[in-house]
Length: 129
Image (cartoon, rainbow, N blue to C red; front, side, top):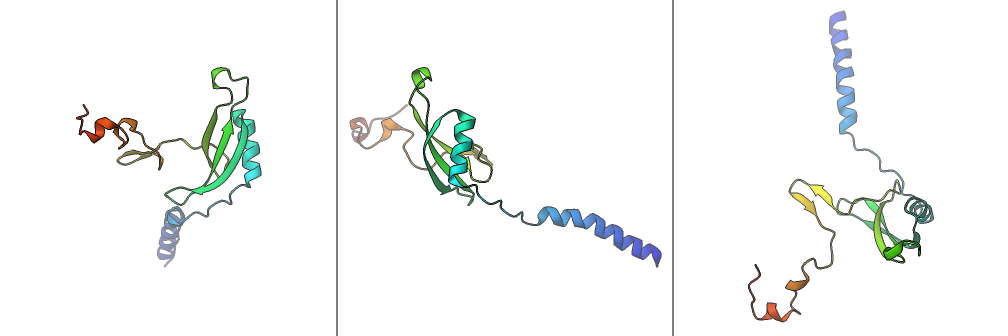
C-alpha cells in the first residue's frame, strides 16, 4: 500500500510541472502611454511625437511610437521614424517577425514601386526581369 501511495505522489510531482507549462499565462497589463514615451525617449535619445495603441496579428498589444531624432544627429537630424514597442515592457520590437515559412512584412505600403499601375511600363505589359 505504501508503494502505491508513493507511486501516486511521484506521478503527481512529475505531472504538475507539465500541467503548469500548458496552462495559459496571464497577459501582463500594458504600460501607460506616457510611461512608454518616457522609456523610448531615454532609451533611444529621440523626441517622441505621438504614441498610438495598436494590436498585432497574434492579438499582442503594442504601441506605435512616432519619434524624431535630435538636431545633432548629422544627416539623420530631424528624421521621423515609427517604432513598434511592446506595451508590457516598453522595449522596441524588431520590424520583421520570423515565422515557419520565413518572415512577415508589416501590413500596408508598397514594397515594389516600379510595379504600380501608375507606371506606364506596367500598363504596356513590360516584362520585368
